[in-house]
Length: 374
Ligand SMILES: *[C@@H]1O[C@H](CO)[C@@H](O)[C@H](O)[C@H]1NC(C)=O
Ligand SMILES: *[C@@H]1O[C@H](CO)[C@@H](O)[C@H](O)[C@H]1NC(C)=O
Ligand SMILES: *[C@@H]1O[C@H](CO)[C@@H](O)[C@H](O)[C@H]1NC(C)=O
Ligand SMILES: *[C@@H]1O[C@H](CO)[C@@H](O)[C@H](O)[C@H]1NC(C)=O
Ligand SMILES: *[C@@H]1O[C@H](CO)[C@@H](O)[C@H](O)[C@H]1NC(C)=O
Ligand SMILES: *[C@@H]1O[C@H](CO)[C@@H](O)[C@H](O)[C@H]1NC(C)=O
Image 1 (cartoon, rainbow, N blue to C red):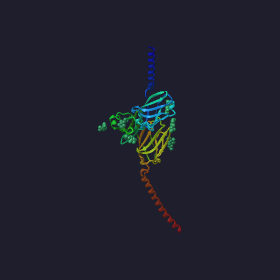
Image 2 (tube, rainbow, N blue to C red):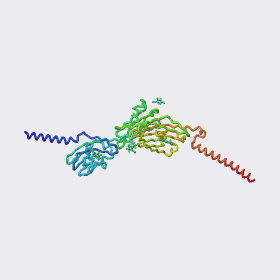
Image 3 (cartoon, helix red, strand yellow):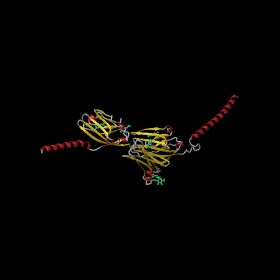
């Protein structure tokens, strides 16, 4: 009787031990890791340190694909799947400390899924699972205006993005889901990343807002048109770039003429700005104020047009359009300002006057000479 009991207790103990053995890795379930597309990513895995380490990283859902193996104190990559070739690394100095974390370089969308980390030492073996999600966050949202149609777009995104339009102040008219659905298109490239583009009628007296969302990331672009600014060839003009400023330490500011020609760019890193003015505009650009306003002078009629100020921060893009109207100066009305044509006219007139003076002077000199001779 007693023998049977002892045997049963032993059996129970063994099964408890076996249960514990297999239960250990299940503690806490899968580890979830979010990796960024094209960047490097660390897959954590730890084990009880012991000698004669064997490490197998596998992808069970893909027929136990071999991701990386290590035994006899070295990497064993003969069985490694082609997809992971040259992209994996263990830290050799970390292995004796019980750290089998794997570095996976140049993350692709195919890297998503569940990975198994199997380790074994003379002290026993362990398994743990890591779930990888891949994101290609929305980085930049572009906004443009052409013929009263606003186009908003963003590229290289994963997971599938959503795009919404709104206005500030809000209006019911701008929210017309049907037109918006109709005008939004999504494309997938061969790497599995999404491009999204949407168009909308421009709301003239409101700020037009485009929001692109993917996963937990949201980025916006805004566009508005402000009141026209008047200028003249003899005056200095300041075109404001009125953007509500919260954290303007890191940004990129671009002033553009007629939405095509770049006038200047200014990049600010940690509050230190660097400005670059395009050669053709050096004469006209007087300064860029701290608030981003563009100060111009020496303007001619060719400088009449739309000036856009685009300010991009890590979160948002803001585009402000301002029409600059140039009225010729009253004094130079007759000669039509300072256009190249009128300058030529002035030069010709000056040459003629000089010639006449020369001619008169000559006659006078000749007369004077003949008088002297007498
Ligand atoms: C394991 O090693 C990696 C480097 O390969 C390191 O980033 C990580 O912090 C280590 N983990 C632990 C728990 O020490
Ligand atoms: C898109 O909108 C136009 C009119 O605005 C309509 O004729 C067309 O059927 C719509 N297309 C789809 C796919 O809804
Ligand atoms: C997505 O946008 C990028 C950048 O504009 C472009 O190079 C690429 O061809 C686009 N891909 C698709 C599938 O439209
Ligand atoms: C925008 O301007 C138009 C005409 O100038 C006006 O009728 C309309 O009410 C304005 N809308 C808003 C939201 O201010
Ligand atoms: C900007 O400041 C942050 C923290 O203040 C610093 O980590 C970073 O290196 C700085 N960048 C540059 C380009 O100076
Ligand atoms: C140009 O702007 C800076 C501020 O951005 C200001 O300190 C400076 O005095 C201005 N220079 C001129 C010539 O107006």
